[in-house]
Image 1: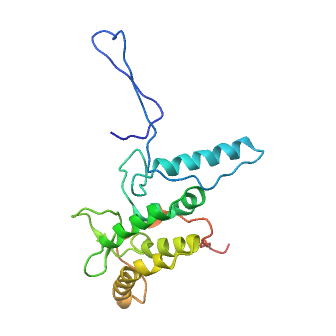
Image 2 (image 1 turned 135 degrees about the vertical axis):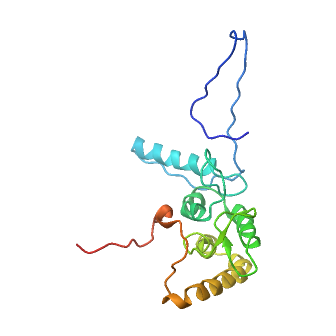
Image 3 (image 1 turned 90 degrees about the horizontal axis):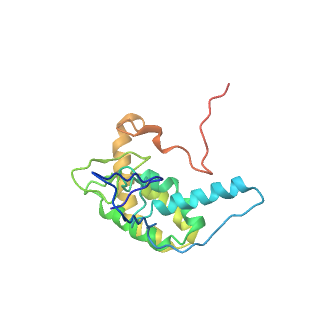
Length: 198
């Protein structure tokens, strides 16, 4: 059984056992450490270590959204911490496999899931901020690794999704008006943020 936790509560009844053993082990997908950060500020060093531990806690053959709640491959969550994962660990093989799962989950009309691997009957959306991360993931990994094979492998799935998106927004003035989880995804480092002039 896998859980994210900080404390363990032990209860016994009717009397305390004379001896008992609890063993907790740190588990995650085996990825090689490739990057690190150290400075003279202990707080920044601890924050970086916390970030590395968080990434590892979410690597279970797929990039999960949290080690303690539903532990699924939510696509936007995976995109949001991709840069942190790649800058700290050897992630190419991991993401190659996950992107294959992502494109294999594609529906005949081009729709992509918001969770992958996706089990039916979980809904598939055309939501650009979640399903559309197949394109963002592929581009980010190409920039990180310079491997054109990543683009080649995902090109057909990306094209089919873009065609679906184009037909979805064709009658709305090219504005996506269908279901979206909204701002749950947030903004990544390096992305431009929208601001309203004062």
